[in-house]
Length: 259
Image 1: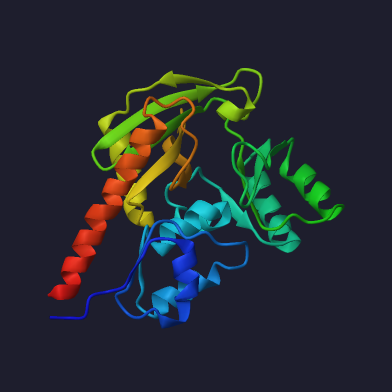
Image 2: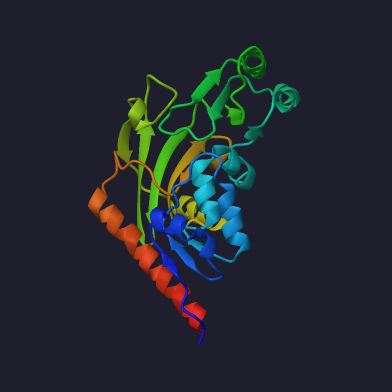
């Protein structure tokens, strides 16, 4: 029988025993990292330490730019991660070639509608960025005036969805004055969400979908956690279900170490 893995369930224990962690040890729960500490996830993976949720899911939840790179097949067309002014200048030709007018810019690591801006054109955005302190990196995508915004919560066999709408602001977030209306997912929409979760190794997720006349179902954003305002599930029940996922995954991982 193999040695039992160490099981880490809080940040204090994680960092006090960081150098002693070994292959097959298990970290349960989202690791709290400061900006710039994400490279520690790479170190843990290299050493064979297992994480629940996965390192990919944790990093994607922290970075819209990372999401733009790994979920490019699911995001709206021409959603692009911008790392510097030269890249933005090059992309401006693409946007003008495709006839995109208004452009949405989203700052990395910002949530609840904060850091989301709309510009009249890609050239307007380039001028703003060039003449000011560059807020790199960020993502850009064409503005979709006829889109619908659907928030989905998925935790194992639990799912619920609601539409977010705001006639007075292009930001549909409830924090920005949007209203929530219960929404029934189609089988196709649910399958899309599960495929996105599988791609990012998310054991559970808050997913924002964009429904458009031209592109159908597109991903706006995915996160391991999010606000429950507008949702039917209570905070207590939500946490209970998350902990159940962690316990079941921990049992499966511990069992695999004994084989």
